[in-house]
Length: 299
Image (cartoon, rainbow, N blue to C red; front, side, top):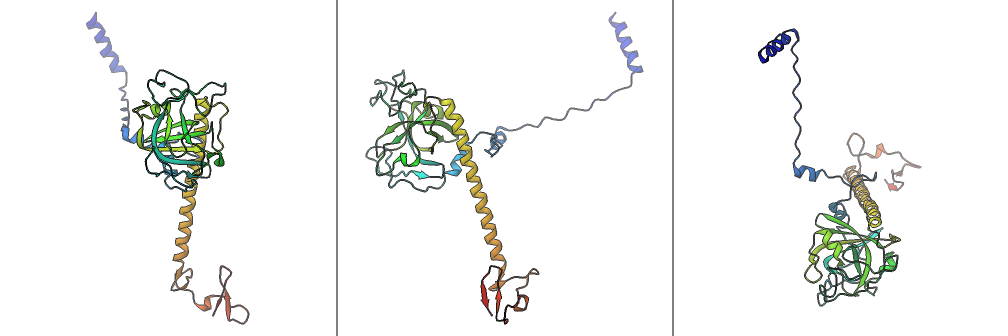
């Protein structure tokens, strides 16, 4: 039976016209590096997440809003200024771990010798904050150095914390010493990949804290709301930075063109030759001529 079946198949192949199918197009391969480089950049249409690099580009330069500088630790020299943008304040510092608030498995008097059951702000239901679960940052207490309240910043304000290539959105949840800056909750450190143990964790540098002005959310414990608000405000911050760069480039091009339009101390005609007096319209008795900018030049 098998031989008969093969014979029928062979006969059928004579009756049918041969068909050649096109070879499938090769599937392009994308290296992990290419994927990383083509990651979406924040745009005004709201597409794509805001990357760490996008935010760090906005805070390259500091316009100090603090009257002095803060210490990273007690006894250290004051080196950190609070800087201002139109819609946010920021500083670059270390990260100490704050485990204060509700006692948990990882945040308690046994794990943290400086543990305090209280935080400056509480949840909307009156309960203490949970540093192990809630990402929050710590502000220095208002002082002559800087008063955060004057900049629309306080409990429940939304913040973006940037470390290396990661961004974590948080809220302002506690107040620290007047002269020391650079502290966030256990949850922030863990999400950023920073050692989070309250006694031995933290990092000595490389952390950027951006707190958005007038961004307070209703329930300080609502991390999902903080993420949505933070992503929106971060995108707006980045887009404004792109607009400033674009305006600066345009103004620079105009200045360059204006400079190229003058030669030998005078304007240049359309044919590239320096303008002669006869090229300019005489005014009145012919002794003066009106320039394009409205100024009068003596002949």
